[in-house]
Length: 396
Image 1 (cartoon, rainbow, N blue to C red):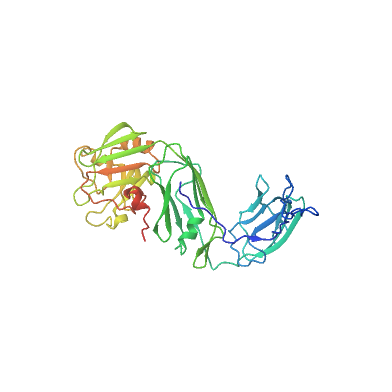
Image 2 (image 1 turned 30 degrees about the vertical axis):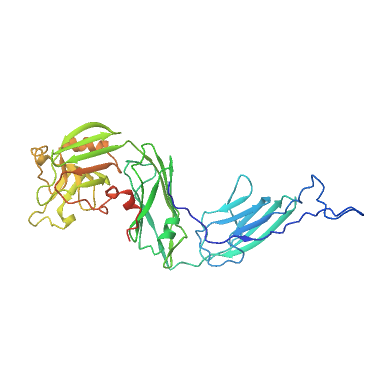
């Protein structure tokens, strides 16, 4: 699995690294010099050494970067990080006692004091006291939103989309603040589609049952151009059954499969000449019970020739450009026979409800033989329009 890793930006500072060097027995009086030490003699035990991040006296520390302590040749017995009010800030000590970290986020423009005590292999304590100051109030903060919600069940084609409220100047820094953790481990990669949007998708469709943890830990992280992350976002989701629909404009039928087994074929009507449905692989974006189809969303006002504004009972969005599959009782006579829509995939009320009840965000919907142009990979969540080599090649 590829995933971004949040890494601190400070080099560790060794605060105590004195080593006691073992002595070698001298030659016996009257004998020849250069003999080795007696068998079984061991090196003298070492004192603890400490590495602290950020280092003592550091200024302009990013509030989102972790505070950490590590020791070698010993164990930590006390680590206390205090805020300006003197209150202890909680951290986590590793089970082996060799490291401690606080990654919960610090305040802006605040001074912190850190006290560390460790006992070395020599049995003696080593104490370190240090302090640092965080960067002052940022000129600009940037929020981020996710396209998944806590506890949601998603489809096998689900991309994970991080949308920042404004342009991100330092993309690498943003990626380091984003984590995608899966069980089982799943290979995937980030791709920026614009300066404010980055998408993580797996190499292949998700395996049903996969657990996904999405964490945008951007609070206090520098994102370039003087901007810092406003607040963290996270969600835990599960991949549901593999639902795939293949809509064929030639046969005017949509074949629905669940976990690779065909379960139903539905009569449909796609876009008529001049309004052909783009061909390609879409990903279900949202579902609506009661929706007004409006040609104005793609630039044709309802009160102009070819315009419309029509209420439908069931509608499922497949693209940003206005492609839906939806109920269309007015075209039932054409469904299964010819293409008469303005680009959407028409179904009867009953079939649209059945399919919407079955499907969910992230399911895969492929259009073939429509006579239309190729679907743009940036139109909605159409990430599967790109091959894996193309996905992993930077767009700009």
